[in-house]
Length: 272
Image (tube, rainbow, N blue to C red; front, side, top):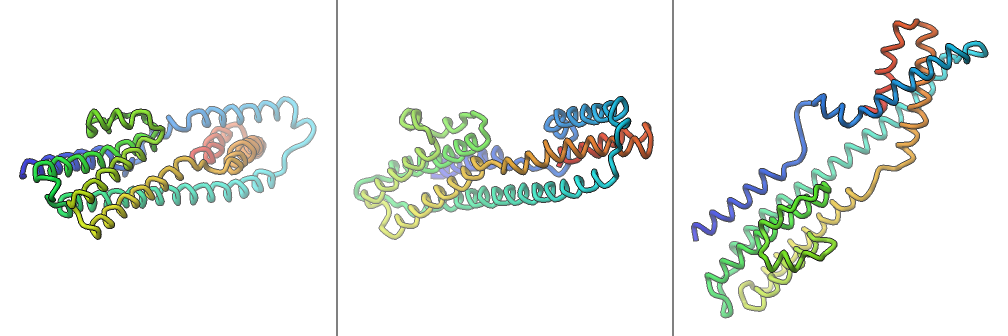
């Protein structure tokens, strides 16, 4: 019995160590560059194009008033503020959903270990094997869900499924939901063999329902993209026009030496 509990604790500890949220206390420069270098190049090219167009042609006909980049910058600030608020709300919602999965997983493990008892149709060794399968299969469910949400293609969940279970779920389009179906099937079998009574069955079945709810919430966040119109206005329309007009006004009022800092100012919308 002790070795059985040790294996369960080892599985849960390994899962907890490998599925932590992507959180860091320091901003790494290389991650910023990897995610925004294309926008940075576009911003520089926009500033160069605006500068040469103004020098070679545009300034001979008219000059941009100062209020143009001011108005565009104000509108851009509203879009950036909305984007930041929505991004944080989505991140915090996802954090609460994953925290719910973690807490419910611990509850599920306790229920499997202590709510199930040997019955007329199941001996203690068979019950221990069934307990281990239920908990390991749940870890497989979490790994499968993590792989789907991150679109990583990892197959770590196979380490916690038997050959029969892996074959049964191989052709399913929603793998993590198929694993939950196996959990419900085994839970029903335990109830029919008098290993759990009706009240405990309802508790454990409600826990599977909670896993399904958290799974659906996670899928909704993954599949719901950010409104395209906000990205378009913030990046393409206001970002482009703000970069161009800011470059022209800074060069006209402050000279060539101060045009370079404009690149960083115009790049701000893309970093945020």
